Length: 242
Image (cartoon, rainbow, N blue to C red; front, top):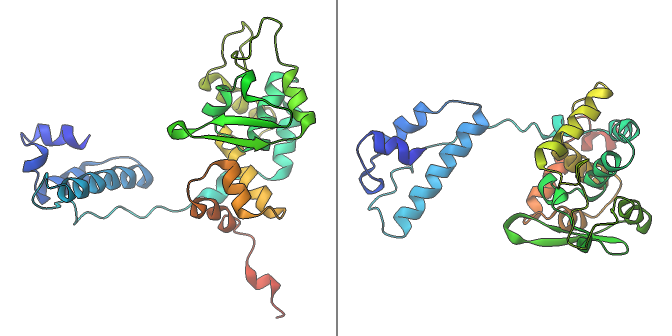
């Protein structure tokens, strides 16, 4: 978007001036989070261009991304809601999809891309962002439940979650399963909210933060630690004798 803006101004990246980046930032529309992400992208680009000698100055140094209110706590389902989703889910594929998203804290894309080769006795291997893989321990009983989804015609490279016609379940279809199940109990939920719930509930119940980090595949423990601060109804003051 920034390069297209510069093109409309008849200048290239090397010719960009402070005025260009300021006017680009002022032209942005959308939520504060969207604006902040786009401004940070330009700042990162121009910093790299300057560091590598592609540009003489870092003309985006003046830009400041708008502050974004942390709404993570609003997107964490409580345990009762998760249990309600599982109870309302259609038995079989839909139920196991929701259960796996919560139990493993997995992303929706890596979940629908699971093949039978990714399952072992009590573990599931996910292929995540940037080609990274991680293995998550689950109960052997749960893995056996997943194996009941296997069709006779399946090979080890067949997908675990399939449509009624046997095609791989796409991300859009998987999301729709979550939305419709949540709607049936008068709630709102998404696949990523189940991932948030996994992290928050695991930490609430005493799981070590480094274990939650490894399970979710967070590159930095600081990302995982956000869930320690996502509960607005709790504070250390409640542990004081006042």
